[in-house]
Length: 217
Image (cartoon, rainbow, N blue to C red; front, side):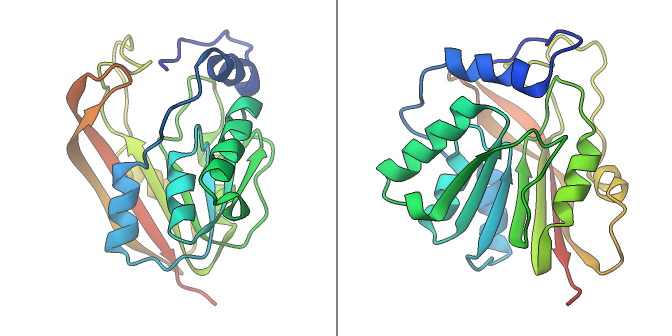
């Protein structure tokens, strides 16, 4: 599913809902490889998690299979209903709560032990930093905020036609959140990997990995 450019006045729901309606339900979903890496390396203990922009729910379903209680959020009603159905089919419906939110207007109420945003990018103009900042405020003391961003343009990306795409350094993204000094940086780096696109194409792409640990009590 490769998004095209939205109309100038399109809302997030106006843009994303038709894309999900026109795409067939996936026959299987996989979690983001970077997320699985960080959950493993940080030795996170299952608790309550909040997934920003869950899409078809690969991350949420994977976490739920490990015992997490996941609030999976997307602006698309179709995406939300598909995540609910997939969780039920997998016997983990009691551990996944899918909610429809336009995150530029509202975010779920925590506290959460893990708040994560995997490729939370959109061609629709939103104040992404504000969404991430408000979501970080829902992290419980001792919990984690994980942000995994694109740091390059893949051949299948909707940004492929950008003349000069800009990718903030991970430090810029983390600093823009203006979190208090009680947060400790566990990971903040750019890293490359071989990824597979929707059509099976493979390419070397770069990601920014940010993992922040809330220390206050």
